[in-house]
Structure formats: structure tokens, C-alpha cells
Picture 1: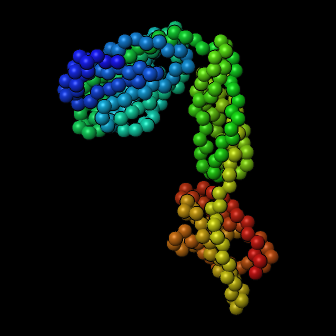
Picture 2 (picture 1 turned 180 degrees about the vertical axis):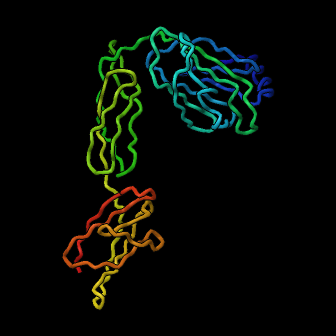
Picture 3 (picture 1 turned 90 degrees about the vertical axis):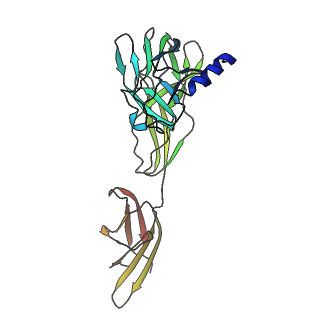
Length: 291
């Protein structure tokens, strides 16, 4: 909690700052309001800590967020830790380390003045640094199984959990980041996907259920006896940019409709393939010529 005097000073300093930064670590927040780099009080973390949330007091220029302007520093070696960045909103950045912190070492989140305001296009005036001691080495006893099945539509990307529940050696339960192996959703049905706890030789699995998508919504055949051919018309999903009938491309006829004239035989089964804009096969549909 800030005192009334601190709140008053902060409001006064706010007016002189083009952009400021708040480092959110667990439930604690610290604010830097100075032209020179602000050194925040040191804090403790454990070996499961890999993500940090940085909040600015106004919209930032996303193009200026990178490993040079916002980074995690391993103090023992003076080297930067490779991180990824996500952007929940226009004022928040989440920086995630690709490795786990090492027990009894120090790491620093460094926010430089190289980030620009997305409003004024000026560089921020409040660079900051907060150092963390890895004071607790959490030993994992087991990974709790994931009971829920993850449903995903065919050819879409499944939304897999980023964290899994684990039991530590002391009996406590926590969450750990996990990296999943690739999974193909081009075919329907259930698939087992393996995941590895970040930085450790611990694994678990999750079931992904790929649900078929009807990319071909409607098929209409009109027979011309005098010519002995069929006019075939297909209504497709909006994601479909190409359709073939028995391997031959159909013509696009606006409003997600495709058509072609074909020599078909009553009682036979034909195959429709649907494709996206890159030529990737989206789905296949078999159809019986009944008339």
C-alpha cells in the first residue's frame, strides 16, 4: 500500500513522464518514475518461475519490444536468457523464458529505454531493472494426468494447456510449464500427444480429439440425357478456395459455389476434395450418384 505522501508524489511525477513501466511479479508491483534506470528491490523466486508481466501506463509500440529492449539477464554469466514475448493487450507484455532458472543464482528483468510509446512515438523515460534470487529449488515427484480430452476441428490447431499440475517432493501441488510435441489434425479421431516439463525429463500425455469438418455442405447433380453428362454443383465452406471432382478441378461460381460438367455413371461413388488458398487438402467427401 502506498502512503498518501507517496501517492501525491507519484501523481506529480506522472505529469513529467511520457511513459512509465510497472513490473508485475506474483502479486507485488513496483513503479519506476525516473529518467535514469530504476533499480527495484530484490525479490525471491523458485525454479518454476519462467514468466514475467510488464505493464506500461499507455499503449506501447509493439515493434520496439524485442530481446534488446526487454530481456532477462543471468547475472552470474552476464548473458541474456532467450525469451519469447506475448502481448495480451496494448499496454501489457508477457516475457517467458525458454529455460528454467538455476537454483541459487540471480536473474534480472531489464526494461530499457528503447521501447517507444504507441501514442507519442517517444522513447520511454523510465527504464528499470529488478533482480531475483532463485531461493527455492522445487523438486517434482510426479505429474498429474490430464483427464479432459481436447477437442479440435479438423485442420485447426488444438489449444493445449500451457501449464500442468504436478506434485512436489514436499507433498504440495503446483503448476509447471510444458512443451508439447507436434500433432497433426489432418485426419479425424483421437490422438495421444506427449508433453515434456520445461527443462526436465518428466513427461505426460493429453488426448486430442480431431472432429471432422463438413467442408462440402451441399451437392446438386442435374443430368442432361441428350448429352449424357451431369452438371455438378457444390456449395462449400467459406475456407474452401478450390474443389476437385475425381481429381479434376471444378470452376468457381461465386458465393462459395463450384460447378463442372462431368461424365458420371449412376450407382458409382465419386470423390470431392476441398482445398484452401495454399493448395492444402482440407477434406474429402464421398458421394453416391443415385440418379
